[in-house]
Amino acid sequence: MSTFDDILEEAGTFGRYQKRIFALLCLAAMPWSGVYVGIVFQGFTPDHWCRHPAVERVREGCGWRPRDTRALAPPGDSRCRGYERWNGTRLTCDGANLTGDPTVPCSHGWVYDYEGRRSFVTEFDLVCADAWLVDMYQATLNVGFLGGSFASGYLADRFGRKLVFLLCNLLAIISGVLVAVAPNYIAVLVFRILYGFGVKGQWVAGFVLITELVGVEHRKTVGIIFQFFFSVGLMFLPLVAYLITDWRWIQVAITAPYILFMSYYWSDLQAPFPIKKITWTSDISGLLKDERVDSAKASLMDLVRTPKMRKHTFILSFSWFTCAVVYAGLIMILGIQGGNVYMDFVVTGLVEFPAAFFILVTIERVGRRWPYAVANVGSGLACLIAVFVPDDMHWFKIAVACVGRLGITMAFEMVTFVNAELYPTFVRNLGVAVCSTLSDVGGIFAPFLLYRLAVIWMALPIIIFGFLAIIAGGLVLLLPETKGMPLPETIDDIEHPDRNKEDPIAGPQQINLLPSVPSIREDGENGPC
Image (cartoon, rainbow, N blue to C red; front, top):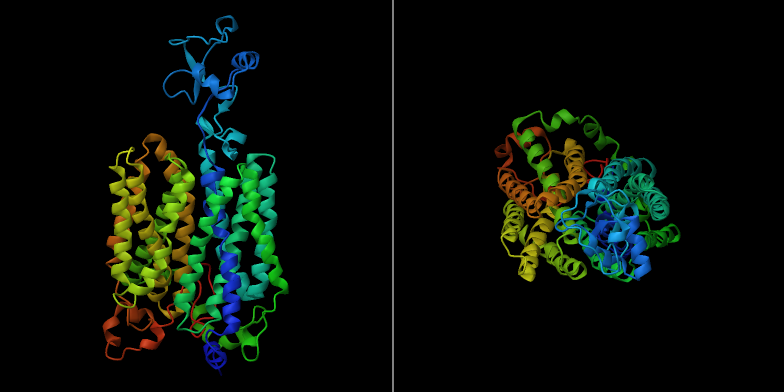
């Protein structure tokens, strides 16, 4: 019986039909970046100080601006404490000297120096004792990502890629709008979970689809370029945030593109025979039934049953976790470290573009292991160097941060196919799914590591990011080099790779499987990205 890839070889591995779908899906991947790191602009925390009714009455009578009341706050760090008692007779339009009076935690809310922007932080007073709730804004999104990854992979196999793509896209629209109109912060967090589920589910369905519809020799390049459009979307976010200063309208702007993608329902995505067999609505499981049997027997224990499998699973899981924590952390810190957040966001985002080029150039010439390790270690060293750069050398600090972003971006894109090349066929989908889950777990932890530790010392989370990346880079060197090696078929191929050196098969290596996109010849299941 003909395999799925045999049909592709007959029809063309990357013809006009595939290119059209590839272009459409790359466009659909762009808004995800705004969803992922929109907190930089939506969760902006401006300077603030305690509000007091007596001060407000005097401010209105004297015609002061809200920021003028800052002079009446206690000296030092007065963001969370105000004077215990206000005697209106002591306060005039000339101010008052209350130095030495006792202070208490703010009990009447806060006054914000909005700087022309309104965030969910200022709307819901998420400062001081409630500041940790800002972290939940990002954490709940990643909880949704986690669910969307698993569910969309399963549902796409069962009901088809196009249907799951459109349904997840519709969920992203509905939940995204609900976030924008939510009446309270609890509702915002609940809708953020649904939002993450829909956005990640749409992305995974599109990723699986496009990497299935191209020939084996194109899958690695197509997968990397598809992820590259995440970086393209990053460039639009600061422009949107600069033009739209209210967090709710930014949310609407980020969600709006998903409305356009519903038009894909009417797109002419049919192709001449035989590619029409593998269009969005196709069920390819018939081609794969016999080859799916072994994969169905895979279990979690297979990932840790033998010494080398345990080593691979631990190192790859740690790598996924580290990539997510460091990548998200280096972006989110732009919103709290001062400087021009719009310009800093653009400059550091631009360095992501060479990442895909460096990967494609190095992995076939040098191999996987050393570029992957150098990318991690380089990112970690950049983080540690940035700690020692004085604040008045802001642009040099940004330059060092750019090196860190470039390194972790390369690592994040490389872990996707390195993961797949290190697991045997029958457990490859499961291995990639389990390890990549740590990426979403890392996304849940990242805001707590950044925002809570930055309160103690701004450099502390950067130091942790640096050591995580360096450790990950060192661990990568314990993995085998997979360049020029056939993809392993069994656990025995992992434990005793020298047995197959006399008869290497280069062909399977070129499949270069990406996360949740197994070789169609090898496995019919598609796990989460």
